Image (cartoon, rainbow, N blue to C red; front, side, top):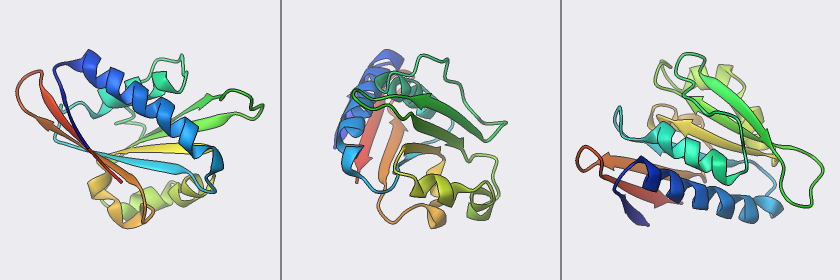
Length: 151
């Protein structure tokens, strides 16, 4: 699927809708939902994550984990007592996939309560699950982005 966004607010709205839909569809999953985000610097990957988190009902301020590598947010879905978790990785500063493995990524990928968003996923693709959602964001101009979603 391809979408064209004409600004940050549209990008966040699209991500918010996707977040809601993924929560609905992940109820029966046995492993985490993993989403890889790709695109050049400034394309809008973190902007997308902010909207996605809002779609999950996360009220905390979401910011890029570029320097801490990972941030975790918890959220609850309707009718469930146990919290779920959104893991937000930024792999820009990692050397390769082995660095993500060292952070315990496989454990996060295995837990069905988790949704894992990985910025710069193309750098660590070797350790991502064989089936994950890939979102690529391209600059069309200063504000316009083409967002491609693939399963």
